Image 1 (cartoon, each protein chain N blue to C red):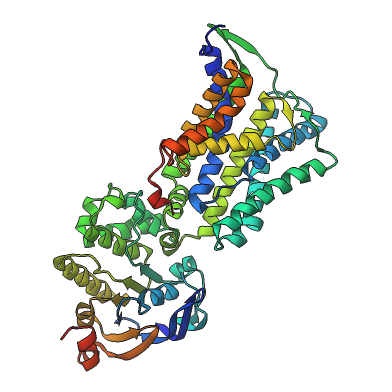
Image 2 (image 1 turned 135 degrees about the vertical axis):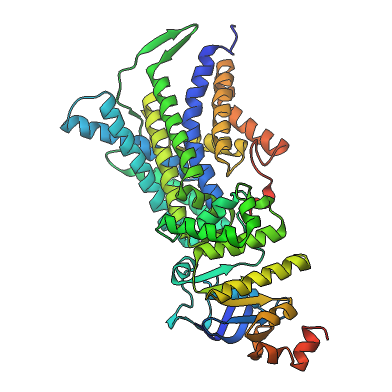
Length: 234
Length: 303
C-alpha cells in the first residue's frame, strides 16, 4: 500500500532523515521504533505531506505522492494522528470531529462516521459539547483517533499514541488500534514504547539517526539481540 | 463649558466606532490566521471609498437616480473592490513569503501600503488631491432629546451591526468559520483534516477586505472628503482598537473599536488635538498594563 524508498528530509541545514526505506503492505500493522530524535515523527510527516522530501520516493497505492500537499493526501486516503494529538483546544469535541469530515461532501456520511466514533469511544461521546482543550490526555488521544476515523482513509498513521498515558489507557488505545486494523485499515505506527508496538505489529523497522537499520517481521525483530538491548531493556 | 459627556457625543462616538470596527475586524482576522499585521489594510478602506465614488458616478450617468437602491449597489461595489484588492495583495505579496521570517511579510505590508497609496495618487482620474464624496442619500436630521441624530448615524450603525452579526454567524456556525478557527489554532492539524489552508487564508483576506471596503463607503458618506492617504490614520486607529480588544479576537476588535470611537469623540470635544492623540495614548497604556488586550488570550497559544 505504501512504499518509501531512500527518503531524505531536511529542515534547513539539518538533515533529519538521511536514508529511510520501508514497506507497508495492505491490511497490516507496521511499526517504526527508535529513540528520540531518530526521525520517526519526521518520517510520518513526510508520508502525510507535512514535510517535503529532499530526495527519495513515497508511493501510495502505486502513485508517487512525495511532496504532495497534506490536504490532498487526506482525500487520497491517508489519515495522520500527529504527535501530541493536536486537538483544536477552543473548538468543541463535536466541532473537532465535524472538521475531520471537511473533504466529505455527503454530510449524512460524516454523521454516520461520527456515530461510529461515539460507539467506538463512549468517553468521546460523553464529552461532545466540551472544548477540546479541557479533555484529559487519554480523551484527547481518543478524539484524535476519532478524527482520523471520520477523515477515513485506507492508511492510518499514528505518532506515539501511548505518549503521556497511564498504562491502562495505553492498553485500551492499543486494543482500539488492533480493532481498527481488523476492520481493514492499514496502520503505520510510530512508538517509543517498543514492547507494546512490537506486540501488535506484523512488521517492524528500527530507525536510527535518520536511517532504517533493522527490518523484518515483528516477532523476529523483537528477538534481535540489539533491539532487545536498546529498545526493550532486556 | 457644558459637559462633554452628553448624548450627542455618545452618538457620534458610536458612529465613528462602527467605522473603526469594520476596519479593525480585518486586522484582527488576518492576524489571527497568519500572524501578520497587515499594514496595507487601511488602504483597502481607501480603495472601498474610491470604488463607491466611482460606482456612484457611473451608475448615476447611465441609470440616474439616487437613494437607497443606489446606495445599496455602491455598498456592494465598495465591498467587492476591498475584497479584490485584499485577495490580490495576499496572493501576490504575502503568499510567496508565507514560510519566510515574519519580518519579511511585515516590511512587504508597508511596501504594499505605499504602493497602493502612490498608485492611486498617480492615477489621472483619482489624483493626489481631495475629492468631495457625492451625496448618496439625502441627509435628514432628527432631534431626540438633546441630541441631533442624522439618518447617516442610523445607516452607519445598521450596516456595521448587520455585517458584524453576519461575521459572527459565519465564524461560529458555518463550516468555513470552523475551518478559520482551526487554521488560526493549528495549521498542521487543519491540513490533516483535509483543509486547504491557503484557501481559508484567501477567504479571510476576502472577508476582511470587504469589511474595509464597506467602512470606506460609510466614511466617505459620513465625512464626505476622500483622498488616497485617507486610510492611513483610520487604519492605524483601527489597528490600535484591535490591539486594545486583544489582537486575533473578533469580539475584542468590535469592543476595542467602540471604545476608541467614544474615547476619540469625547477627547475631541474637550480639545481637538487631544482627540487625534488619544488613540496613541490608549495604545501605550494597553501595552503597559495589559499587552494581550481586553479579551485577548494569553500570548502563549498565539505563536
